[in-house]
Amino acid sequence: MTALTDITARLQAACAKAGRDPASVTLIAVSKVQPLDRVQAVLAQGHRVFGENKVQEAAGKWPDFRAQFPGVTLHLIGPLQTNKVRQAVALFDVIQTVDRPSLAQKLAQVMADLGGAPALMIQVNTGAEPQKAGVLPTEADRFIDDCRALGLTPQGLMCIPPESEDPAPHFQMLATLAARHGLPQLSMGMSADFEIAIAHGATHVRVGSALFGARVA
Ligand SMILES: *Cc1c(COP(=O)(O)O)cnc(C)c1O
Image 1: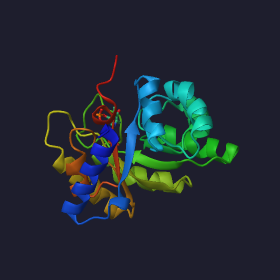
Image 2 (image 1 turned 180 degrees about the horizontal axis):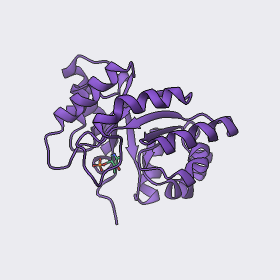
Image 3 (image 1 turned 135 degrees about the vertical axis):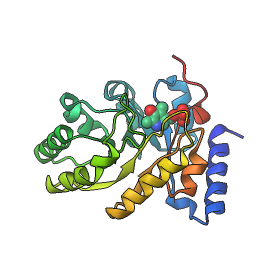
């Protein structure tokens, strides 16, 4: 059994337990820092949804992989600097890390310019950790409204709970916030906790090391 079939089986079991349709949860294979042959192997098994956390790193591998394996959907799951927005809009199908007014403004401007339209999610710093990206929970309501006022159409919310805490309350906070704003997508859950995230309504889980093996530094 490959790691992909194992994770897929676990995802399906978590959906069954939560009374959810497995088709309502997208597995994002987080390929950051992984050796190319490991990524290629997962592509060869038919998987097509991937996540990267750095624009530059993604630009170095995904144009070639896309040419080889049609139908790839690529998610940006790491912080986005405004000076990389143009490149990110051209490269990614989904940008999950919209988290501040300057970035939202730049995205609106570049998407109007290029006519390109990646789907967008808003990252929420549910643990209000100073070192972590994401809009603070206390500012999230206003930021979501501001994004919409700029003409952006966010599809959902994303979070990375604090490492040492029970993730469940963070997943619940994100789900409640999304429901309040009518946002259908929830990107939450990683290798260690994707089954818990599915129980709380995740529509996208981001799994790296459990799928590819430990990241090689
Ligand atoms: C690296 C990363 C992941 C995957 O983490 P694993 O624990 O290896 O599954 C998920 N989400 C984000 C935002 C990441 O940067």
